Length: 218
Image (tube, rainbow, N blue to C red; front, side, top):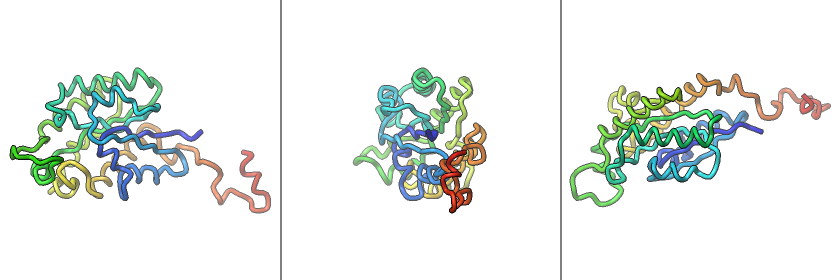
């Protein structure tokens, strides 16, 4: 049976299978070696995800950044810890890889609010996203879980607000590319790479046209 990677998270995960998305790029990258399964739930936060599980064993790849939007959310460290405890308790042998929230462009959120916003304040802040990113990294370190720090990496580049984010939160094609490339590197570090994974069924170059069944007997 082919191994599977489950992408578990919020709208950034849900949109990852759009054209040029990091999820679809990952599926294409591993097309002959494993299956990439989408479990993205727009608007969900860790409290909701803790109770859902997505209905299937998971190899989660995102810690959702919707805590602040849900009326202030909770303590970042507690949200991250409870989320990981739930996953590790239910699937103790599954490799878990976390990604922090990306940074938030507050000006972009004011221009693209979910609902009419008369307060003049963004419903999310980059400071809060940074707090959850920090908690994600710290808790991952305590539990020995690999993590990708999107919040820090993206802000190292000039004009990241427009280059990587389409509406102050969700990713542009360039932002999706960054996530995909970071994932490939981190997965390779954890023994998930094209070089180490067996190919699903023989390659066409390995099949003898005069005796095609022979290649399937190996």
